[in-house]
Amino acid sequence: MAVYPEYMVAPIRQDLTEVGFEQLMTPEEVDSTFASNEGTVLVAVNSVCGCAAAKARPALKMALASAEKKPGKLVTVFAGMETDAVAKMREHLLPYPPSSPCIALFKDGELVHMIERYHIEGSDAMRIVNNLQGAFEEYC
Image (cartoon, rainbow, N blue to C red; front, side):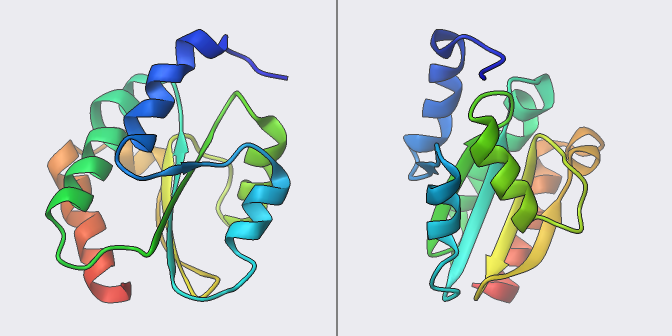
């Protein structure tokens, strides 16, 4: 069951989908993302909160726009909306506790880099950009 009305989150979803993120709506879509265990996948657990709007989404877009190396696949789930898809994604994010927003990078099916909400709240967007680009450089 969705916590927020779709009309409210539609522009927030679009903020990431318009730059290439695939919105995952079901647990099956989440599992399918990791089925091949090949390549790099950047996961954004999106949220309506202020730190997602002011820091996480802008940092994701800036990091991807200016990075030389980039993940092969970009996906997002929306906390508070598709609860089954979010719960399935959070299984892949273990051992990290549920956190939204958060950003994770997988390489060949393995979680190799994680930015939790408290990292996002405690940083400015450029620090997050630098963090992401460092991870892209190392793993992509």
